[in-house]
Image 1 (cartoon, rainbow, N blue to C red):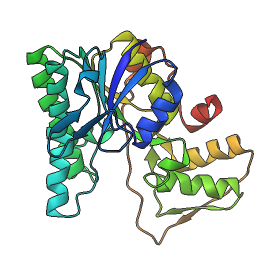
Image 2 (tube, helix red, strand yellow; image 1 turned 90 degrees about the vertical axis):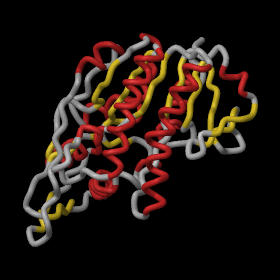
Image 3 (cartoon, rainbow, N blue to C red; image 1 turned 30 degrees about the vertical axis):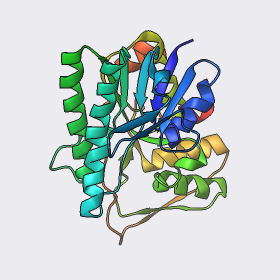
Image 4 (tube, rainbow, N blue to C red; image 1 turned 180 degrees about the horizontal axis):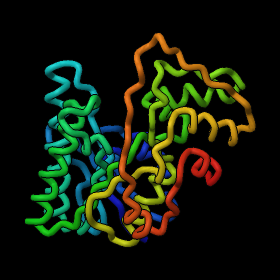
Length: 277
């Protein structure tokens, strides 16, 4: 049984992954909560407690992330956690001879400066990737960086995916789904169970490299509603509120190599994933 050190175990992704694989992997939980096996503060780069539990770990997974960038202090915290914190965890891999480091990045790391959603968060994720690539290559730590699209699945993701969950609630009630603007914008979502399966496959197959983790198809909002209608056996209609500002487009390139290397079926879209899980 692989021994996995995991930082960010109490995050939505961490809870989803551990609940699915708690009988297949031995987890060592790193964090600031009382139930952590080892205390770690990524802002301060401080590690204490029963540190010897890190010895013999096969993998360290980083699921921690700071998102808020609304104040100067928040931006500093964002850099401390997303960039310096990730680098600190890679240093722990080197120090404790943990052979593989898996860093959960974000599809936003692919954004360019002229993209509508580009900002401090995207900058921090991209910068972290660049630092980690350089450090892990020099220190011979096997690195895998995963860039998931917007994650959904359990209700705990609803706060971050209000557009999708709003459509889900409307469809479940067979109500009309209202969409701002005239643009039938594209979106790409990844189910927590698909992401968890890929994480497990990366561990089993010792996968390295950088990968986008997205569905095969970028779906329009009307296509997503059609998938939801099909899954929930409803017949919700769509109304575009044309006087409202358009929803911004999002297109992402699917990297099927990560699915091939982990043995996970490539999901086409929302219906495919909901039907599987």
